Image 1 (cartoon, rainbow, N blue to C red):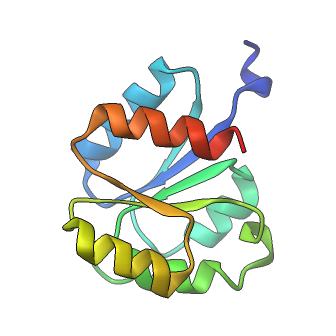
Image 2 (image 1 turned 135 degrees about the horizontal axis):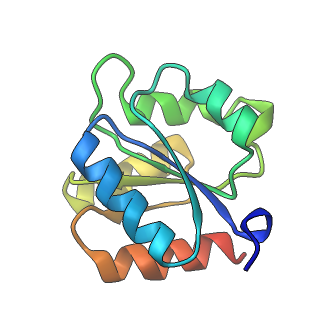
Amino acid sequence: MADDQKKKILVIDDDEQLLMATKDLLENWGYKVFTHKRGFGSTAAIDLIKPDLVLLDMNMPGLPGDRLAGLLGNFEATKNVPIVFYSSNDEDTLRKAVSEYKVKGYIPKGDIYELQRKVRQYVNR
């Protein structure tokens, strides 16, 4: 598939190793992947990249992912972009945060099969 036809995913996470591992996995599955290492500045990155999906870590210093999700819900460039928490938080916390911040869902970190399944589900809506 031509690079300009690939679905674009933006991964926002402060953990450099996890960010690169996730990027490698998603690229191996055929996605064009962009990364951002903190909450601050991510609205500009979203506006520039225009991703088909945003994977957002909840536990970041400065601007945590749940607070960022609340801000992104009011941002014109993200109104039609699925935002999904990608976090190591327990599933009860993730479910509550999905409901509270009106994101599309969550993917637990460390579950590669769930990552692949849910990313495919969100980008092919």
